Length: 402
Image 1 (cartoon, one colour):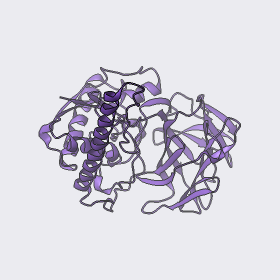
Image 2 (tube, rainbow, N blue to C red):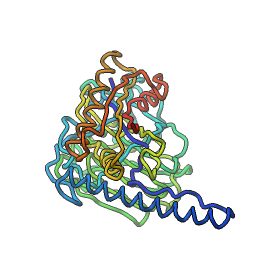
Image 3 (spheres, rainbow, N blue to C red):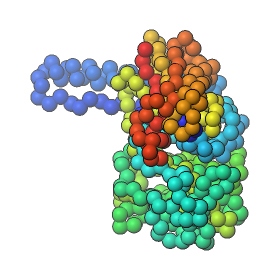
């Protein structure tokens, strides 16, 4: 069974209002109605933002910044087989700056299980160096065996809204930069570049003359990390584990990125795994405007119903929505892919939905009687389970108005 992401189609740049298109030449009364609608929308969004802040204070016991003492876990992944961060931990340990929400429509997913050990993976392009599919502790990784090398996903273009995440593992890093991730034009010009570790203990991201250098504190540089990027038009954010480590609002000075390059190089033969590239999420003005919210951003360990703290961005938004809409009740439904026994998948999906409701109640202050929970296992796929991208989309949690 695979680890479920219940990520919403919610906004990662939290709840930006989408104002309806202006009415053209529809008369004076239509224009008046439009103005009223715009004011109402802004008021609702402002109220939701305030409710999200209130929910975060309930979860953290503080206002702007989360409490220290994070459960140091290496990563949070999309597949249950990946391992991922261990244990639930406290949501109060997750900074409010950690606002990563994975995209909804998976364009590329690779856990390297479809390739032979020792071979170059079929879904990637080799630019330089030597790479091979390897195995460590029962999991598949793509390892760079040369001094350095670069690979790229076989994808076409970058959507306006996109997310990228993967696991990284490196030892014997010394002072070298073991991981470079870059946005590049079709003519191979570099638009932006992220480097880790930089100067031995930092995460560095640059775009032309703009740059940021963020020290990594509270966790070891060597070992396993979860790396995430979120693109919104010309803006790009970067995350490492449970922290946001870069935020560049405009990366367009060097052109428009159409592809992403992965460069690895260090004496310890660094590796990547569980690469997920997705479109979205779109920024809604109402999380449940269509009556349902489908999310892939709620995470669990393999075979576990314990909600991981990396799920905080989604849960903050749901709690904020519930705070603004005091009369709304929700049904929470868990879903899995078809890997594993049907009875086991059904039971796990039910337990996970119940866990989500419990966390929203106990850590975010939403009354427990406002939730009903259920699980459907693998009985209601939204995409084909024949491909990794489809299985990734089928692992989800849904919130529906009652």
